[in-house]
Length: 274
Image 1 (cartoon, rainbow, N blue to C red):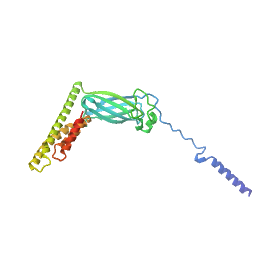
Image 2: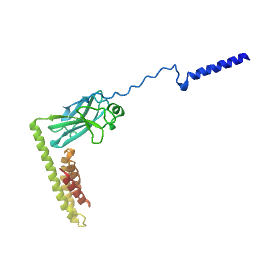
Image 3: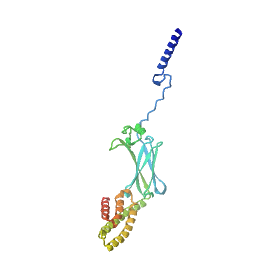
Image 4: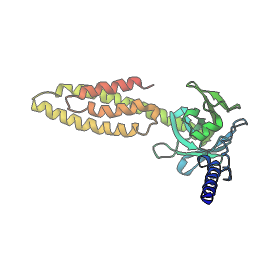
């Protein structure tokens, strides 16, 4: 009996010791977990250098280096105001570098001209979480001459660089050719609008002679409309109104019951062209 009581006591003590050494599954003898290092907060002014280089067939690339955190999203805009060119591409910082492009004009090489590349780091709230941890959720850790307050809240980073493509003579020729093309497209659309309105007398009638005349005029005018649209499609997106007008004017010179509505749309687009 005494032996039984002794064994029971020893078992109770052993269980008590085991319970004390394993509170909630974390043994006092278990190794301590290594602390997780937080993302480093930017403590120096933002640096961002960029250059524009010529790729194949007159296309342009924009690349550079920065001390912004890896995975930072950038927006790169290349523009040439003289010919109304503007295009954008996204870039991501990787190992302190970024690259955007190649920039082209409808898959063709760019015209000679003076180009400006603007590199922008958008507001922090659109950046990846790890980037926000480094720069601050509103960019409060960003400092330096490249940092600006955003109109929508938070801070952004902006930097621009210029690039000249071609000789000064070729640049002047490109600008002259561009102005001539814009004028030519606009004039032809205006002429087609006049022709389309003049066709109204042949539409919506049971007169077979009038319908035949409408068909003949439509075939001739739509051939012209097709050519003007092809020319308009070579214009940069800054001339979007001319490009839209060149689409609607094709229906304007048809025998459709809605032809006049297309004429009105084309005219509205022309009025919106700067």
